[in-house]
Image 1 (tube, helix red, strand yellow):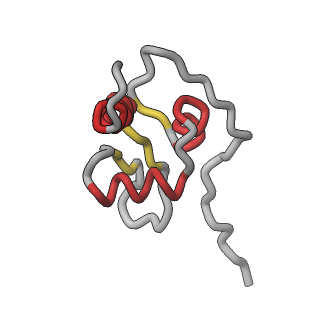
Image 2: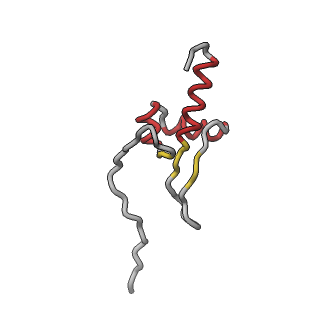
Image 3: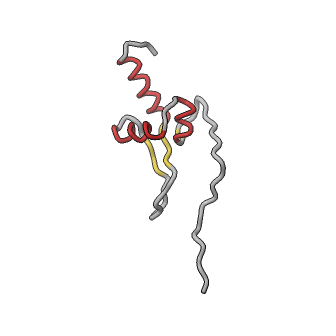
Length: 87
């Protein structure tokens, strides 16, 4: 009797490299750039203020979610203005 091993994608350690030109990042990048944690990022996506995309393929249960950095900046700037600050 032979068993078929499940195909697994290679997963390496998380190395986050973000800069001013970063357009999309995972939640590690959001944390590094803005201090926004994973649960807060998903909450902002649900509210429609932060755009994201899932890289899940076909019938996979899990995938990689990337967050749109310019919408995160726009959200934070709008909060700053709402609180009476300046950009």
